[in-house]
Structure formats: structure tokens, C-alpha cells
Image 1 (cartoon, rainbow, N blue to C red):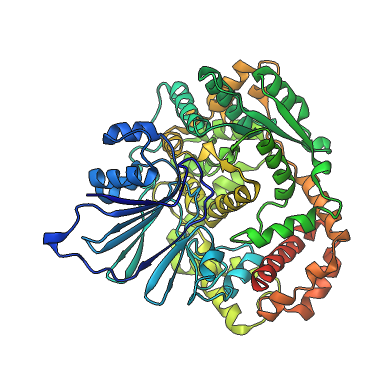
Image 2 (spheres, rainbow, N blue to C red):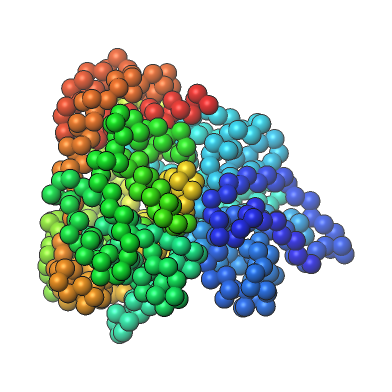
Length: 594
């Protein structure tokens, strides 16, 4: 016997909000009357639903909650590992007295939780939880102070003291009042399969990438944020081919046109759209900036976000996303994740040197420097190895020294409250990676793309912005099967033809021979970003930087900070720090006036 509760009227709609509450202590049902199944609640989107239904012997049209319930009958708690998509799922097993709540592999669907009055509640946003009776709205002062120092030592904490985050690829198990978080998916947990694929790499990669994009396109009419880079062009090419094979409407190309030559990609964007036969909506960046300026519009988004805004350009891209919705798209595909998964970590340099593979190190440095200008030999090779040697010689003193160095650059106006400053210092060392990681420096660095808080917040931000724009954002490069496959490709396999990201260059160079993808370098918009931000800060409403809320919380010393703010308003070198202050203040202020 199975029971299932779906929070969604439509299995293809990921944007329904959910808030589930369960008792912390569940009374097991006597064995003689116990159901063999469990009650399932589901929010989000399942990929490959037809194939899953076929494997489980279920009707193809069965709703996601019923499919998950069937999967639980087949695989027990391991059922979550067999699912693909953007989802939150709760499995309430009364017979075993156990509650399991899981977040999808890559964390596309947010899961936050809080305990209150003998219950535990889960929701897609912290704000939904602090609105419940018995859940404190108190802000997390130490997390806010750490954010201003750009430190995030605990992936599970949020900026609300009473609310926790369930990380991507994890499940929470509640049994007998005890709460435990477990990681159910970690493609980097063992070294046995890492870097093991040598043959037919190109064919396998294209198969993985096509499956990842097809899963998104199968959900319905789509659009693509099309820049001129390898990531979005690769997605657009596959999406167009899939639509053609299915005799479906081709995706819409959504291109932001930047006014600065440093980041103007319109020639490549237009050529790709024309070659693929895609309708292109080209949005001039400055036309998407409201008359009042970019900064106020960006900060206004904080009211709707689980955390302070990560992407200053979110507001103009919301204009672009709404254009996609007007053209009929229900999903917008992005290229985020390409930098994280499509290229080997620069820390492979340290692994090559440590293993005595100097020829491999030379090949790696050449491939990397062809694509972008970074000193991989020192920064990602010799420096981490020097730290490893110091740690092996005197581990405790080295760790203490590293922790002190982390906090040494903190501004003096951060955390004037001694207790708060002490709490910050006590956890400063938690942001440090292993000095001698078991599976190598590259694996440790790449794995952080799943376990660090920034990717979690990025997915949560896209989720919230999608709800505002009535579209879902999907990220094919965060497909779990693609990530698993890429984790098994050797460094030289990634850097095919002696170029960083050679795997993705090859098919694009064949498809667009005149656009130079085989030799394309990484485009950075740092200068334009800094110039724009500095200009916006000069002209912004000064009330954004009175810092009343952060000062009242004891997170900043308003008396000592004003000189810094005044000096930094027109200084490009300090623009990012000033933006952080305005951003965190705006978010905290808007949470307190609800």
C-alpha cells in the first residue's frame, strides 16, 4: 500500500512553494498493522519520468510523488539516488518511525529547515520558515559578519539563526527526535574511478552533454542565455539539434549585448544564432538598466532572496528572462557550471609536480595559459605543495598560522562586539582546505563546487529569481551524470589538442569553423564590472550605506566605518567591499521590516 502527496498540480512546474511540517518524534505503527510503504511529498521536477515509470512498471502519466513512492518500494532510502531533476522530497515512513527529506544532487531546488515546538518544518525559503509560529526571525550575526569578510565556514548555516540549509546531494534523517544529515551523492568519494577514462573520451563526453541538455529541453519550450563563450554555445547547439530531431520549436536565444569592447560578444552570438536557425532576442545591457540605476534595482531583489544577492547583474538578466517568457519559454538554460566541471582544476599542477610528472605539468601549464593568463606554476603548483610540506613538518602550528592569516585582513570596523569577534575568530580556520588532501589537490578543489556554500546560494538565487520571472532556470552543466562522467576523464583528456577545455572546443570548432572556438580565450569582464560598480556607488542613494541595521546588530562599527565608506565610494580598488556592505545591509534591513 502506497500513499503519496504532491505539492504540484503539474509535474513540470518547479516553482511551487512548499512548506512541510512533521513531528520530531514519530511513533512506530505496530508491525501487525503497519503499511509496507511510506507517505511521500514531492516538490520540483523529475527528469526522465517516462523511463523511470517504465522501470518501475508505472503508468507514464503518474505524478512524481507516486513515482517516488514506487521507487521507495523498490530501492528503500536509496531511491533518491535513482532520481534525476530539481526536487525536494520527503519520505515519511511511519512503520520504521523515520522521516527522510532529500535535496536533489546538484541543489537546483532549495531545502531549508527549522525545528519548533516539537516539530520540524522544511521549505523552499528561510522566510517561509521564520513566518511559522515558534521560529525565531533573529538574524545570524556571525554569518553576516563573516559574509562581509567573504568567509563562509558552514555550508548548512543561513543568515537566520534558527534556520539551517540542507546541502545539495544530501538527505536529513529524523528518527526518535534525533536529526542527522547525510551525503547520499559524492562522485569524488573514492579515487578508484577518478581520472580513469582514456579511450573514446570525445564520444562519451558528447553523449553525456547531450543527455544533460535533452533532459532540460524535454520539459517544454525553452530559451538559452546565449553569450559567445564555449559553455552557452555548446548548450545552444545541442538544444537546437534536439528540437530539430523531435520536430519541436527551436529554443529562443537570449543574448545580453554589453557596451564595452572588453566583453562585447555580439558577433559570435549573432553568428551562432543564425547558423542554428534560432530566433535571437538581443538585449542591450544599458537599456535593461532602469532609470534609477542598476544598484537600487539589484538591491530591491534582496527582499525575495534567501541570502544577500550574489549577482549584481541579476536585474538586467531578469529583463532578458522575461523576454524569454514573452516568447513562450517556460525554461531558461544557463551555462553556469561550465567553468567548474568542463575544465580540470588548476590545482592539477600541484598533483603533477607531487607525482614527479613534470612533462604532464608542462603540458598542463601550456594548455591553461593558452586560454587565460594565470600563473598556475606558483599559485596552483608550488605554493600548495609548500603548504603541504609545512603541514607535514609541524601540522598544528601550520594550521594555527593559516587560521591567523585568514583573519588578519579583516577590516577593523567588522564585529565591534567582542563576543561576536571572538565567535568569528573561533571558526576562521574552518574555511581552510586540507593541506594534504587524500585524493589530490585537484579533486579537493573540484569537489568544493558541490560542498561549498557559494554554489548552494547560486542555485537558491536562480530558483527565487525564476519564481519572480515565472520561468524555471536550468543548468545542464550541473547534471549529476555529466559531473560523474567528467570526474573520470583524465587531465590530458580534458585538455584535448593541447588546449584547456579541448573536449568542448572540438565539436564547436567543427560546427562553426569560422568563429575560432578552437583557439578562443577566456573572456573576462572585470574592467567593465568594476567601472560600472564604481560609477553606481558614486551616484547611489546614500541611505543604502547608513548601515543602520548592521550597526544595531553589532556587525559593523558605524562610527569607524563612515570614513572608509566615504574614501571608498570613488575608489575602484574598494568598490567590491563597498558593494558587500550595501548588499548585506540591504538584505538584513528588508528581512527586519517584513
